[in-house]
Image (cartoon, rainbow, N blue to C red; front, side):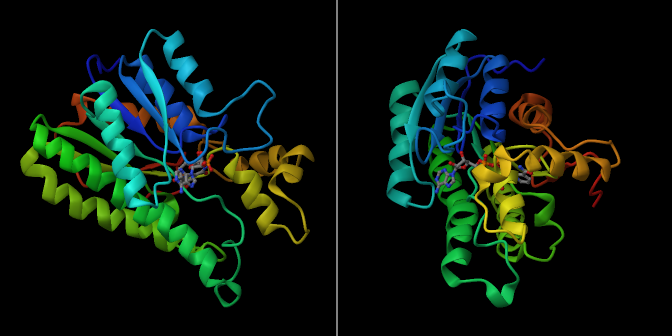
Length: 283
Ligand code: NAD
């Protein structure tokens, strides 16, 4: 549908079996892009299927589609690692045309009332979600400006980046920050024909929600146990019933918007924060 032939995309946080990053990486490859599949570790979630190896599995899926892909690991909150990731990606493919800054910190100790929120939990969320977005965008933007061929930068905010809710303070603050950052960067990069837009997913059924479910429950239970007990599936059904379009989102729902924003069809759009939320948030 969108022709990304000859384009190279870097997707961070892409090693989760059910993650948004994997869905975006696969969709961009289906649109004929080659993909740098990045994550902080090869296989971020312990309870993945037995044959799921994380980022290397995503690379194999992309290669099966006839595109090229490589795994490069990096902690997005570390400037040196991010610069090395981008340099290695450019060495491998010669260029980066599309950045999807998708990595997000794992929910857990941050999902508590502010009066109980530890500094460390606040910092983890902010260094991953906000500083990580800054570092990835800075490294790729420098390359895109030097190269002079324009580009597409997609950041990952959330509907929580537009409206705060109880026990989501650190997360919401980081995602509000991503939107402000996206708008500023969009203005700076517009003269270079680099479009910068944020996606704001609502509830998307990924590994993340097992950890949120466990953190919000009153029990002492891990994300893995929460998922294994069947309560993840039940909670997704319940949340879906409150959404105007009748279900929670999938990674593929988000990937459709990412593919559009990565394509020339979005050439006149920049600085936006687009909800992919089934109507659960309309502002
Ligand atoms: P996820 O937890 O499955 O994916 C996040 C990925 O980021 C993981 O693969 C993880 O290993 C990686 N990561 C974490 N810390 C990192 C670091 N320091 N460096 C590099 N990678 C790191 O979650 P997801 O649901 O697929 O979410 C993807 C993005 O979408 C996140 O930014 C999240 O905040 C956002 N989002 C998700 C939802 C949802 O309902 N799932 C809703 C709104 C926004």
